[in-house]
Amino acid sequence: MKRTGLGTALLGHGLAFVMFFPILWMLLTSFKTEIDAFSMPPVLFYEPTLSSLNDVFARGSYSKFVTNSVITALGSTILCLLFAVPAAYQMSFHPSKRTNGTLLWMISTKMMPAVGVIMPIYLTFQYLGLLDTLLGLTLIFFLMNLPLAVWMLYTYFKEIPGEILEAARVDGAGVVEELRFILLPASIPGIASTALLCTILAWNESFWSLQLTAVDAAPLTVFIASFKAAEGMFWAKMSGASMLAIGPIVVLGWMLQRHLVRGLTFGAVK
View 1 (spheres, helix red, strand yellow):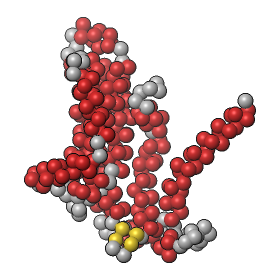
View 2 (cartoon, rainbow, N blue to C red):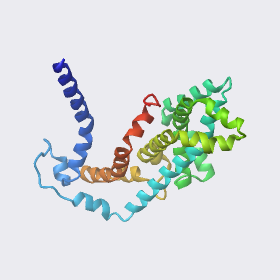
View 3 (cartoon, helix red, strand yellow):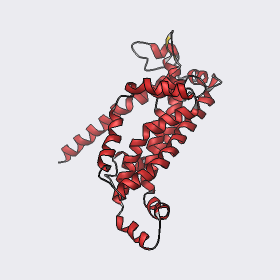
View 4 (cartoon, helix red, strand yellow):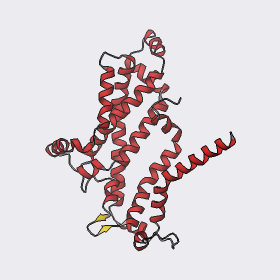
């Protein structure tokens, strides 16, 4: 029995190390010179340097990329919650014959490869003048995360007994009062985990950012990709930029990991 427990623990730690290894390698590479980063076999013992990080900060537009990431990630998350909360409320407590079909259709859009719809969306954005704008990038992040937000909130709302809302209606509460004074306070953990997950997905998104932005609205993911040039890949600088980009979101995820795990399990862990 003890051997089984030890084996399980070793297997778990081994899998955790394998999953963490790319991040560890990126962290170590960010403190190398470009020559050491390209060395083959890899250089394991070297004198750490901040030259790559200094080169990243030396780009005067770094703060602009950070600002764009913050605006689009938070803006799309707020939009998601504004639309997802009433939609999930309606489908949870006032379902129709088409509710299950609508939920299935919404989640099926997440299974479709994004490249399959790049052409109509690109042309639409071009026609509306949304290319390389913060509004356009925020809208695409909002549309990208909305199905997931509705599903997560729908699952949380289904856990709340409908009798509580019925009692509020008997006391004269309307829909707005139900949402504001009953439903939202009871589902704060679910809303928090949904908001956190939407923020992380928007912050890390790169496909739409690379396709729909160039200079003015480019977020950090585009900034990281800029270290791939015709001359080749600047591994050390790219690792430094990646480390700076994921730093805030890793800290945020670590602080709220309990809510995030619950959100990723769609409310299965209560």
